[in-house]
Image (tube, rainbow, N blue to C red; front, top):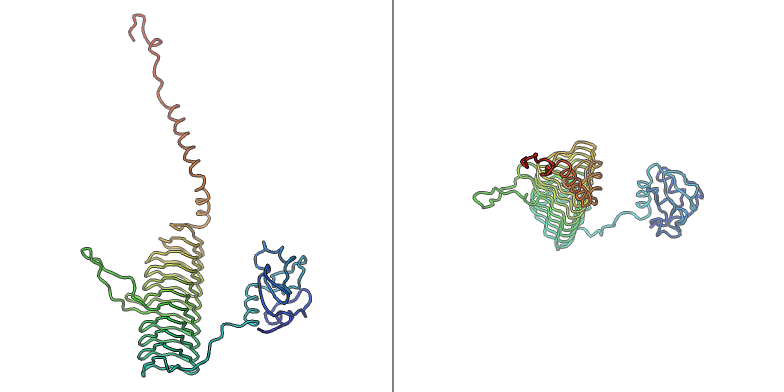
Length: 357
């Protein structure tokens, strides 16, 4: 942890100070929990009143707020500036530098680059290629012919199946599996016959995979996770799916096989996507949505089945009124039936002089 003045932080993030630039900052916290020496941030205007009550020594904000009682760091993108400050003050997780453990099992034909650290009981199979600066934690399995780029981190008990390709600066969190067989079966006369999966997995640079994820290898072509995409915990990505650059998949998302997802898409928690469809660029899929059709670029969809967001909000807002609406419809039907029913003639009025109709 490093202490900095607010002025130094402003210079570091390319912002400017409103108030005392010499205030000392040692750590970061939320507006509600911050104490003296902490810096916080404001991105949601509904929390602006907390600027008057926070105990933080400073706050990062996107524009001047004269009502604030603390010095401010004014930044174009306050959340990004807060991230930069967090990295400067705290840094990322530090990895133990231990070299190659004698308890690791490493094939004679595997190649490991400079400044790599392979922990106890990791297994690296034949012809694997691991470039410089990688960290392989205990119990990780690196299969035959796997390629891992520089400065990547493989956490405990990760399994990377044979032939997978992992880029530079990739993080794969504990207990995830990369390259498992896709869920592909041919059903014949009631019996499910396994289809060989001959494709692999390609994970491009700067991708992070959460804990307990399953990334299936392709049936015929590779499954691809695009540059800079971030995958949350317990996510399943089906065989042959292609995810474009800079996507965000929140925890428990499930994507069936052979789906194409464009760049800069966000998929909320527990979202489900069927196979063999196309999701455009800059698409947002809300939490628990069920996507069964193609989605064009720049759309926001929600619900199950997923529909365009404005339509979905109107539809779902009516659900609580459905019982009353149903009763109103029944009452109207009864009224219409009474109005339109033929009137039975009065027998005395319709009878003739001789008593016959």
